[in-house]
Length: 66
Ligand code: SF4
Image (cartoon, rainbow, N blue to C red; front, side, top):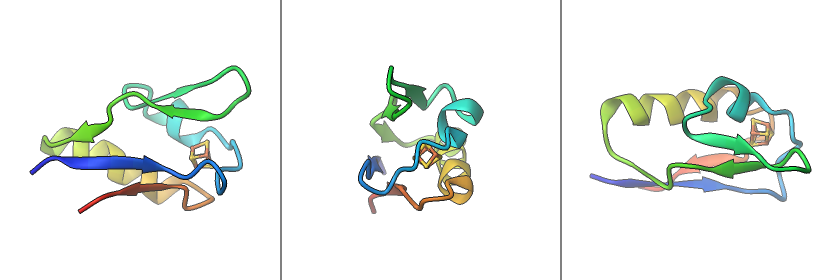
């Protein structure tokens, strides 16, 4: 099942954990904000990457839709 990756930029504090640790899924914009590179994830490998990003985000700004 495909799951959508969500990013709440109002919560994000631009700590950069997501794009530094998971550069295949997140990139840094010019102002330090993250950007989603893979909008929908399905494989176990992709889900694991995004779940790790969710765990380490200090602002709880990343989520996966059911
Ligand atoms: S890890 Fe969280 S707080 Fe840091 S840039 Fe990514 S979304 Fe923002």
